[in-house]
Length: 372
Image (cartoon, rainbow, N blue to C red):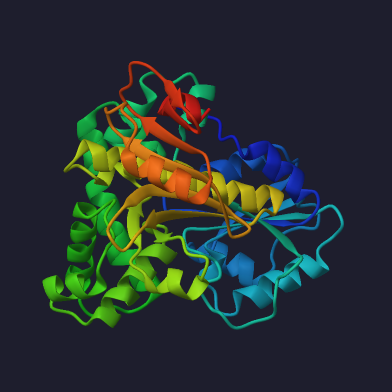
């Protein structure tokens, strides 16, 4: 289990034969490990990390030999005008050369200026270990392990829960001290840390920027800015309510979840909902990355507070409603309500389940079987 195979490897190898590949995802999610696994499929490849002084000189001076067949650029988005640089490398490369670009931030969030790279790359998002990946690698007690430790490789594969927690403490502090400062200079990093703590307690609930601003004694605009940074660095992701009016959707309160499920410790239901949210986000992201489908993850909520946890949307049309229950198998009333209202199927995913059932258009399923 130490060398768990990532399921995206084969697709990335195929895409590299056609264009550049951008591999993005949270810090320490396994991008470098995967990049080096990809490198073993080439005869003469080179790995260059822009954070390394020696590597940076090689990058800036183009000091790689002509017979290199794969160039891996890591954290290159920290370079000024990196888009122009990568465009130039790609457009002038030799026919046998392939380019893989990795980064721990959304590559379109840094250095917005520069020539467009449109048409020159495929984007792949690397997520924490999923249920399906764990099954493929013969992991036992998958859901319990993912809830307890999260799906990041080091804590997930740690020999003990203590080692997992030590990693998590260092991980969060490293993100705050290093990555956030790389993104933008923040005067008071303690406020960012306090914001993360508040968001952990509110997983699964619509958040109020005004309420968070009062709690942290900051302006609501500052809270929005901080959350945007956390989102751009793959620390959190937002799930917005679905509305046929895009403007109305943006104005309504989002729900916030974490890429590291192990950060959520206050409630089993919240942990499970965060795990499901992450898997659904991966599902719609793969639909976009691999198949070019306009699929999105939302939730539904009415003015009188009827709510269903998640809604899958394709081409602005609801395709599936999803409710999460840690133990309860009895179908939630709000799932009936929205299924009838929008004439769409629904499923209720349960962590600890005895019997799967189906009533009309609604199924109650074991989460292990749904994410197969």
